[in-house]
Image (cartoon, rainbow, N blue to C red; front, side, top):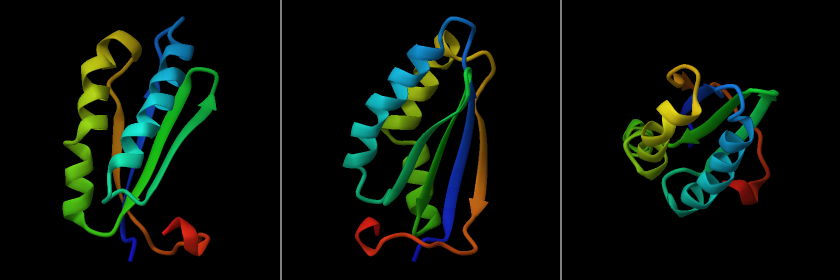
Length: 103
């Protein structure tokens, strides 16, 4: 059962908006390889504001994701791409509705 989630807000540096979008597109491949990350979204909220939302069955899965390839790549490129450090919030999932095939 999905009970844990993350939301990361990313603000691109001026002129780096499409680079952030491209980074998130490549992160999808990494997310697809994470067996403990059943739900993962990359979002464009505004022209220079992006987000990542993902959800997990356990706290251990969430922590594994944070220290995994996407988190490492994000922190490696943050100084180059982002105007501010990623704003990462740990969330509790209170309810969820998804197609059965998504879980």
